[in-house]
Every structure is written in C-alpha cells, then in structure tokens.
Amino acid sequence: MIPPVAAPAFLASAGWGDARILPLAGDASFRRYFRVIDNERQAVLMDAPPPHEDPRPFLAVADHLIGQGFAAPTVYARDLDHGLVLLEDFGDIRVREYLEAAPHEEYSVYERAVSLLADLHTRPPADLRPYDRAEYQREAGLLTEWFCPAVDLRVDADAYRAAWDAVLPIAEADTAPKVTVLRDYHAENIMLIPDHERSRGLGLLDFQDALVGHPAYDLVSLLQDARRDVPAEIEAAMIAHYKALAKPDGQFDAAYAVLGAQRNAKIVGIFTRLWKRDGKPRYLSFLPRMWDLLERDLGHPALAPVADWFASNIPAEKRHFALAEHDPA
Image (cartoon, rainbow, N blue to C red; front, side, top):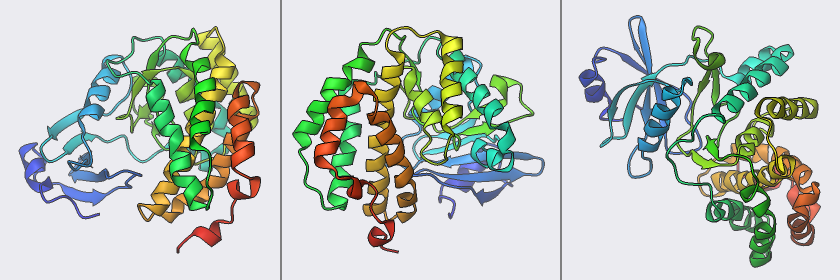
C-alpha cells in the first residue's frame, strides 16, 4: 500500500502538503484508499488509477446523493488525470464491525439502514443508465463463466440464459418505481457517523456502479449480505419494515427473490474470479454463504425455471465443494 507517485503533489495543490499518508483497506477492485492526516484534519485519499478505474461515476453519484440530503463523502479535491480524489473521512466505524461488537443493536441499525433506503426511493433517481436485461444477464453469466469451469463442470449456458429470460420480466415489469440503485449497499459500505446529523448518521460508500432499477435490489444487497450472516428473522422483519414505509405494490416479494438469486449468482462468479484470475483466495471463504442464499432464493416459485436449470446442471456437491482442495494457498 505505497501511495501513488502523484499523491504528494496532488495533496500539496489541495492544501494538504504537510499531511501524513497512511494506508486504509482496499476493496475487490483496483481502487485503493489512504487516510491523510494533517494536524487536527483528516481526509481519505482515493486512488482510482486509470485506465483500470474512473472516479467520475463516483463523483457524479456522490453529488446526487449529497444534493438529496444523504451522507456521501464531500469531495475536497480531484485530479481525474491521475485518478486521485480527496474525500471527507467518515471514520472507522463500519456497520459490520460495529455489530460484531454490539450484536444487541442489530435490529435498530438495520432498521435505520432500511429507512434510509425507503427515503432514497422516494426521491427522483440519478441520471444514470438503466439496470436492463443485458446487464442482468451479463452479471448472472459470471457464474457459468467462472465458477463452473473452476469446479470442472460443463453446463448448458444457452439454457441458463433462457431460464433467466423467463424470470427477469418479473422484476422488469413490476409496477414498483425505478430508483437509484447503489448496487453494493451492505454492512461493509455503510459507516456509522454519530457526529453527523445527515441521513440518520449513516455514511454511504462504494456507490460508483449505481444504476436506475428496481427498489428491491439494494434491499437484497443489505439483507442477503455476502460478507456477514443476517439472521432470517432480521431479514423478514426488515422486508416488512421497508414495505410499511414504501408501500410497494405489484410483485415485490417475487422481484426480491429474482433479484436476490441474480445478485447471488453474480457474486459466486465474481468471488471465484477474484480467486482464479486475481489471486485473492480469501474470497473462497464467502462462497458457502453465497450458495446458501442463492438456494434459498431459488426456492421461491417465481424462480422455477432457474431452479430447474441448477438442479440439472450443478450437483449439490459441486455447489458446496471442499474449499481446501481448490485453495492454492
């Protein structure tokens, strides 16, 4: 985690020339983050190196969220040529670690996070491209592209696409309003910022891939979290809480299951790719949870065509394969 070469000059031009630069955790992309400390001030330096990353989508969505009263990080300075952005620092209290230390607050924290979503969904969506069929299919296809070869399975990819084509209209044609979909709304991307009055004290991160789509998607992202177990009773209670606030009509429960299955299939593929292509075997540890969530979603009657494909193409023992046999470490 060595700071980028251009960082000192960038920080100096932004008035932070004497600041110390300390590494923060990265994520599953090429982006890296550093904490910048200058006496009593501190900020976060995002390194989104071109051509692999482009910070402009993040900046556009941040402006949109801030304009609607939500706590996205304020941007202090930017250098798009070098992919550097200096951001407001929301501190270190992520929802995931906070709930590990204070599990008795799980209900109340998730209730706040769901209330934030319901609020966001009452606002006009950002000027973003739609979450359309091509995107849904591309993402779902990551499972057959990466997971199946990794476990030595040859599957019927055409039938897989056809199965998704049979169920995706449930979400696409639902009468729920089209909303800003952050796409990675979960416990590692929500910060507790108790000193802020903005947006229920919840800070939003990692929304650069936002699109306009169905409101159930981010609810699934939050409640079927790839990185922590959300108790089934919390999931059910929070779905009910969202419905009480947003009052969705149409086939909301079916759309929730369809988008849950689509998202979880995508993540199985992404985490396998992170292992096989990017040399990050730690993501294998999340796959059992992802398969449990995916199989639960496939149990909804609306997913019958996709569930039938999985039953015919991916045996149970391949879904829950022995991680040690595949981990090169």
